[in-house]
Image (cartoon, rainbow over the protein chains, first blue to last red):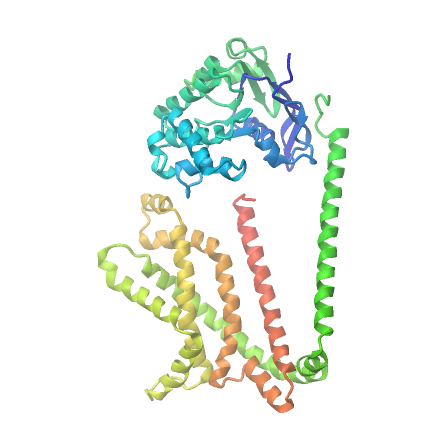
Length: 249
Length: 284
């Protein structure tokens, strides 16, 4: 098999005394959709933040296409250009129009001329179904629309790897569907995606692999039918039982 | 391959990275240090090497004159300090009031709002020195009973009038930066307008504008020296008297240094306060 797009090795992250990630190993191969599940505080978001080099690691490595980007000698800004992130709270820039949000990185970081960047942004906005909102400001849009803009923004510079951090958790139930449909479409196009989510049904449909995190450790990892349907570990079973009780599976 | 790392045991790889980061930060510190020293040395050489330096040093930086002027200037500074404290308290109280009036909504409040806006427009735009003359010489000139005659009090009134206008605008910016949802939450709990302002909006607003408030505080510290134009014997006036006696400008430099020294604790206080708020609210 070819080199994985993302390879996390022995990742440790601490906040003060608390160890949030305690030696995580994880590979994501090209065109693969890997879903992280686990209760709040299990380290899913921290893992994604570490992969995007937004946090300084306390041990271990993050490799992108075989290259160690967690090395302090590597320019993290350059490494991040190969990744696109969508945050739980959208994090759109409220002082910029939708179009400017999407084209910002292309224009400012990648030096794409405005005209070309905007043509590409309009294509993306059409694909996420928001072409007519290009000149609107983010706060005028619904949560679901904002999150779709955020996805378009993350896709604007053709990232090798898409990181999605609980992107439906801040949305009303009726808006979750439109965002997940978009992610499903991206997965179908062969995008490489690492995502954290609480949407177990979605994970089952779209994931190539599901990873269960607990207490900063990767407890169990495998195809969705196995991890969600017939988990090996007791902790995974407990977690899934609680999720089923909450009516989320 | 590193493999799984046990908690508490740091891998060889990470040890090497930490060492690299340390060496980088040592390098940055060294560069900063060297560049600072070089810059300071260049300035020193440029100033002391200038043709007029011996003359300037004698008339501005004469240690004997400085020592002789110090007691009188310190005496004057004590007056500045008292004026500062009294004025600042008055300014803060009045400014919150003006800011609150300016943020009132609804047509009923239009006259009050217009009055507050007019006040701010007038006294923010009026040069302080002219206001000092108007209040200092014009007000007693009316010969009304009860109007004070003391230049210190009159100077203080002028300072309060001007600075209340500035500080009110700072408070207003803070009040308007608090998200409307905070007001909604407070009103939903049954708090009235005043309680909402006092317990929910103002505490958040003040924290946000603290640096700007302390900025105005330091500006007031300096401007307290302007009451000397009315004849009050403050630090600036004392320095002027000394200068007139010795024909040496060093007393002014002494007064200037004392004002700078006065401003430094305020700056550190501002930093400490903002840090405390940030720590408590868990922001980094």
